[in-house]
Image (tube, rainbow, N blue to C red; front, side, top):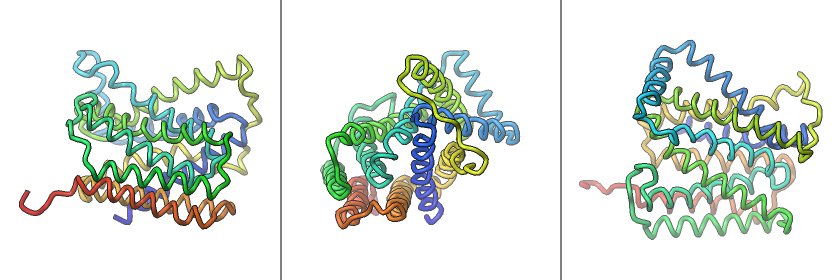
Length: 303
């Protein structure tokens, strides 16, 4: 469980790193592209060194060629790209705590949508009272953190972007599940996601700069190497979550990762001096929302 909490903290660190990189280069889309490219390179190296990852990748390629894996099964990288782009655009203005809490709310809403519709073959489940209450508590937490960090009208679109990015993560899990069926391991789906995401973001970055939407600042030098580790942290999250879910189960894994994400977010905002009493109330309230939302997934003894 401690490992999952640490991975959650790494997820918050990734948000901070990508947000700082976006501020440094004056372009969230370029920061997201760099983050995805770094992650792609790491996954390529892992695939070259790990036989099971190579077998998984070959299985995915074969499934695409034989059309056993539908084309939209490769779209998880687009949804992941939205999330990383939201980090680069939103975190410099919102702070890590508000972004991560809005993202958690989006994940809850997205998971409700996936379960209610049976999106892409996911098991169809009813919307339980616990999950609705959890979403309400998390929404209240977002409002509390917003009030505690001087939420202005200009920040609201970024807040909505954070919620949308969280929903994209839930949808990405459903899409990636299609790839997992054919690969039988975690690295190949991650490699596919990072490859697709890198291509999409690179095209977006080139177009954004060509039409003058962004003016790219010089890239950070070697003395700011830590601004380039966001993609590697994303890979670490992917692999560790896949490894520990069998031992913890989805319920404990979700709680542990979210706890780490919120702890990390709070620590970063404390260090930046962005924390107020409402933020200190809102962060644990968001975690409580996750606990309540997941109560319906706990099986009673004998069931």
